[in-house]
Each structure stands twice: as structure tokens, then as C-alpha cells.
Amino acid sequence: MHTTPQQMAFWCYRFGPRTYDIFRELLILLTSFNLGMIASDDWVRYAREFPKEMPLIGKIFTQRIVHNNLILCTRIQRLNRKTSSAKINGKSIGTFIEKYMFY
Image (cartoon, rainbow, N blue to C red):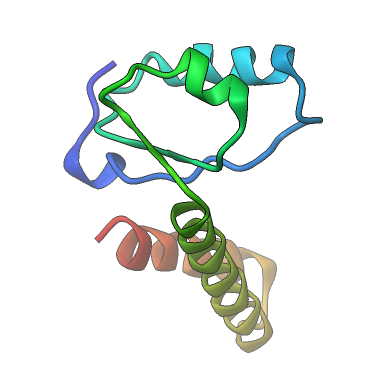
């Protein structure tokens, strides 16, 4: 799969209980991307599975991701309140995410 520079930055968040099976499923989904780094908290299973040169382990990295997601949600909710119709709403939110999150 070819990725553009705009697609290189993306956020993954927890999409299931924190079990080994869910983690392996996420890892399989991420193998199709050419990832430069992976930020994770200090969970033992992460350390065993990630390539040694790739992860950034520490709470500060995951806090930055959570902060960025919170800012994005807040700005989208504000944009949602300012638009009148659902059709315009979907287009404006898509344009906003494309412009501000993928530079």
C-alpha cells in the first residue's frame, strides 16, 4: 500500500479490551503502513512485540496523542454547531480534518 506524506501521521486508539489478541490484531492491521515510529505506554506486551528500533515508550508520548485527539474532537464539535445542514456538515468536517490534521 502506497502512503502519501499526509497519510504518514495518524492516530490509533484502543478499539477493544487490552488483551493480547486485540493487540496482535492491531499489529497486523498496521503492517501494511510504512511506520517510522510507534508511541506506546509501558505495557510489557508492547515491548516484546514491537521492533526494537521503532517504539517510543513512555507516558508523555501517549499523553500527546490523547491531547491531540481531544483538541480535534473539540474543534469538530464546535464546527458541528456552526453548520446548518447534515450535507454541509459532512463536507466541512472532512475538509477540516484534511486541512488541519494531515497538513
